[in-house]
Length: 129
Image (tube, rainbow, N blue to C red; front, side, top):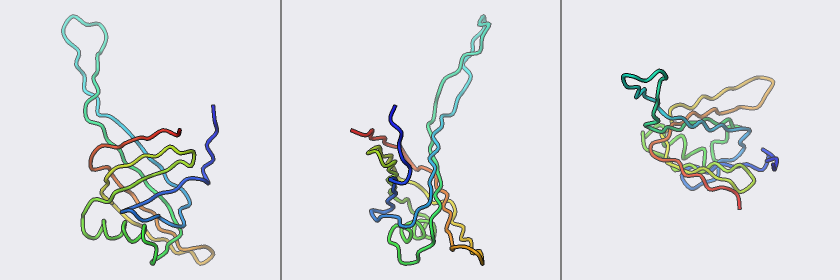
């Protein structure tokens, strides 16, 4: 099993690189419905609608093209094309709706932006070569 080093990861939003990213997360899930019928002693379940969402934290940069695309997506309500790269060549790509952007300013730190997003259609995984 190869260990993937997180510091090689990256994100693009709207075709522009999101700079100053400290971390990101990607969550994938599926709705599950019970399909048990009479006579069955055990519950049976089926996977239905797939979903994905995530978040990122970056040092705030008002001139960064990727961060600008995220802010524009939030203010306009339009979807933003995202590509999340793990750093080993594995990528996850899809259109997402920006749910929120929180900006934190700490007297002893660096101004940070936290972004939450939800997928608006399928998520494509491209494994490393």
